Length: 115
View: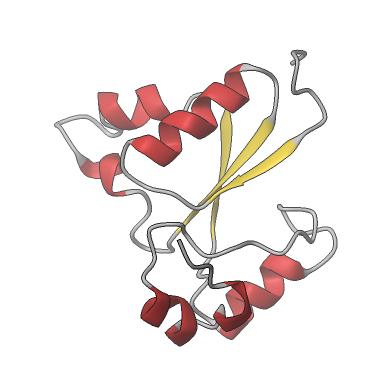
């Protein structure tokens, strides 16, 4: 797919509406968006509704790839940082909705930002 953002890789760690919507817009403009989801749970919107995928999930996740990866585990973080991994070995920051205490607890102590 072409577009203004062709060749750009985006790693999405968000869930619910705002983050997935922003990443969807980037995908629509040609970026390669890789959505990281928690193993066994996935995006909370996957299970909404009576169908296999909810219309809300489908509407916010078009043009994306999806990978199940537990960024709270050492193994998951090592996989995310591995060259050739789905995110190309790019260090994945914590979700922006994380509190400073959960950022530290989940192993992202160096990535915490103050507002």
